[in-house]
Length: 362
Ligand SMILES: [Zn+2]
Ligand SMILES: [Zn+2]
Image (tube, rainbow, N blue to C red; front, side, top):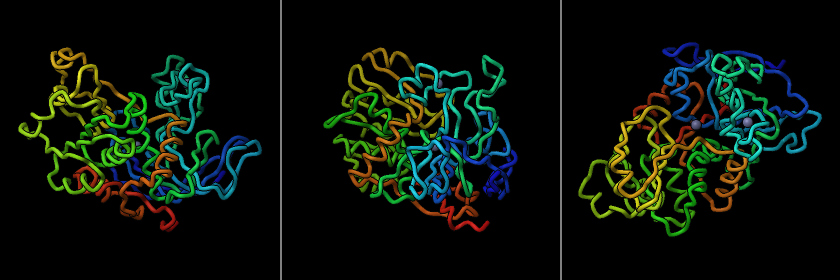
């Protein structure tokens, strides 16, 4: 067993604090990674605070992990000791279902769905049709830790031209916004709307601009106007500004909502062209009721999308490396994580906290 340290919460109302725990040695097809950086995602807060009613404690979050391979199993072919690599939201999947066969592991239909980087399988044994847990463990510990052990094919290559700390947020925020743009065929010249300008939203603006789109940001924060323009936004609209919305009617090819909690998407359907789609990626919870009169009127769709596949995650890393795209990050020490959570909830972060795990005293 490997002795590790990490920061975890023991209960929904408890702060994160340092724990000492053990991980299994890497198996034949697994790699051991020494964590260098870990992004702080809003999901980490939802999970720690049991806001999805499925948290397994202790909860040790972190799914935007970048580190160095320090040991490889005997059959590992994809990575070598010394490689700088990434780990996103998943560390395994059933590998048998149609989704896995198609390389869409993030939509795994296996009895326990995919194995999350933290908090164990997406479908725990109590809710699985088989009543069992095919992964053999009810909890997993994420990247707020000194080391992590992951099957080699769920480990991403970090291109040399990306700074490791800036690559970290691409592993969740990047792929979560990139995947739906690809799936719905967003292309050069399209008019794209981005709702929310936080960790996901600001990356979405940069990605959409790099795809050649005309981008409008909808934000509730007047003080984010300048930042939105600096990220390349062509237009910035303050939520609830009806006058600013009027000239935008029926003009958008795609709208992506990155708002991380329940919100009202109804005001945005009149902005979409006929047959176009509004996709929500930030809020994994019941939304304000949808007025189907609005969507029916011009045959529009409302859709969800969950992170992205391993292939898409590598694609977004390569895409950002080729186009010099980097998330806006603020480095913090793990000791500041509880304060960082508060600032994310209150919207004070600009725009993604990344924990420097190498600065952690163990
Ligand atoms: Zn995330
Ligand atoms: Zn599967």
